[in-house]
Image 1 (cartoon, one colour):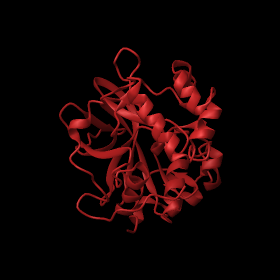
Image 2 (image 1 turned 120 degrees about the vertical axis):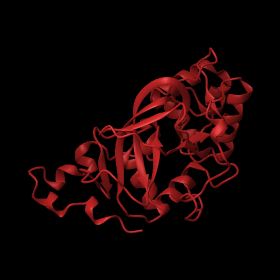
Image 3 (image 1 turned 90 degrees about the vertical axis):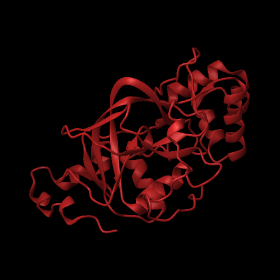
Amino acid sequence: MAFPDDVFDPALETFDDPLEARTLEALGLAVAPRDHPLLYPGAWPGESGLLDGDRLLPLTRRTFPGRVPVLAVGSNASPAQLRHKMRQYELSSPIPLVKARVTGLEIGVSAHVSAMGYVSASPFRAPGHTRELFITWLDPAQLAAVDASEGVTRPSGAYDRVLLPSTGFRVELEWGEPLDVAHLYVNRHGVLHDGTGAPREHPGERGLLAALLAESPRLRELFGSTPEEFCSRARGDLRLCAEGTRLFAREGRTTASGLEKYVRGQQTGSPGTGESLSPPSM
């Protein structure tokens, strides 16, 4: 699918801010958590923009026909992570990332260990709570790629993609316009709780892993005693990651996200269109 012509304005070449200053490297956004698990969820932009290859450009429009809005609560808001995922599927279309104020959600901790070497983020229902998140506007091929990366297309995958209802939730774009429809990835295993039964918030990977390891002798037996050891052992070891996921449940660390009721079966590609993709090889 071709990206609309008016999203990228060639006149940007004449701006005082040269395009070289808009590279992910120059903006401090070039490191993908898939390459450096302890940096999960990766660096998020300070402003809305258009991810175009190795650059994050200013937006020149506010609507994106033919694209699906998906809320990012973890590394999908990291331009480097998105670039990494798109390159695995040889996709090069730009991706708009738009800041939004979201009411009714908070960022929790997925109750599973990812084969990428980290314990990722997952949303949970938080009535009345408002926070800033990014919306990624994905074309059908991009949506299918992200679905595959999140495991939506596999029975054993970690996430389902759900359509967030307007009742109980509000998504307001940074320019004040409410968004009627938004998609969200919800973990099939639930989320980790904080010891009181309430969902635990994700503090960043290093702090999270240090806390989880300190709380569980068995987790230390499996993954080592430091965040570095955890990432090294977990990365690419599907059996170990599955055992870590089961351990969360056995030790009573998991709770519901409150979003499970919105799952309406597995969704792949763009709603009503598009194709599923196989997960990328490790």
